[in-house]
Length: 116
Image (cartoon, rainbow, N blue to C red):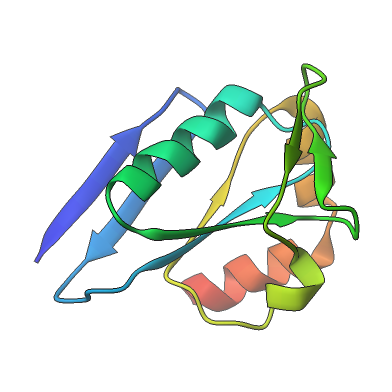
């Protein structure tokens, strides 16, 4: 057993606990106003580590605009995957993105469910 640990910035931290699992699923939730460098770096590093990374839009629109007006196309929308089991969740920072995430009851409930 070992830990895979990435410190992307002071605001973003990924901490994935890996045992003998071969397949690890990580969801990266994108909300309008997210910090682009944090989201893309997380996605890139985890995919290079051969983890399954699924990006998900908080809204019904797959295209999500970041805090610096860079639009990213998510793999899916949150409503399609919120009830699935996954091993980790990543919430990229950015003032607008974090405000949208913290005000979404689905995200709050999912995090509580995962870590209780």
